Length: 203
Image 1 (cartoon, rainbow, N blue to C red):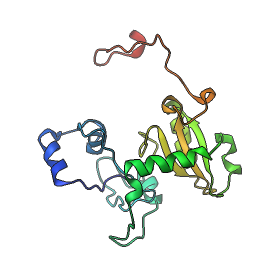
Image 2 (image 1 turned 180 degrees about the vertical axis):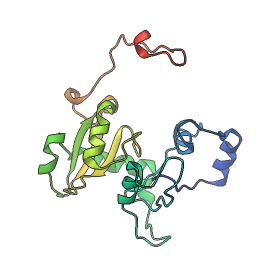
Image 3 (image 1 turned 90 degrees about the vertical axis):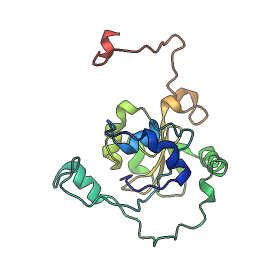
């Protein structure tokens, strides 16, 4: 769960005046997408340091599917302050590291996941958001909105084999996937606004 966060005082002063009383999809979504903080990004740890404890909340009820999913999530055992050198998360270092990993990565498919092993290699698994629900079920990820994504890339481990995976959005994969694996926007595609409640089929 992404419910633990830190920002500098100066950042808070930028956004507190526009903090929504009731964001439609949660304050964390607003912070990432609607707060005006871009190009800043949220850093999400591979293993969470926070956990959801309540079982009688608005979104989490005891015995519900989301409650069971949260209960299965791993929690970091690191003591406070023992995060080590975090300079690798700075943009230049992170981008360079990602480029090195992708250079040696191997393309894979959902049907091949069971044959992968934790061999230190990164395996690229192309996806589109329309298929994410099934992918999330297979990889035991949060089934709603795709989280912890950077340029369409979600770094995870297979829950069965522990193989390192990079889920790569075919629509955002420029320079990351072979052209044959990418979904390119049609040159004549036009984006138009709809009225509230109007279905896409009516446009």
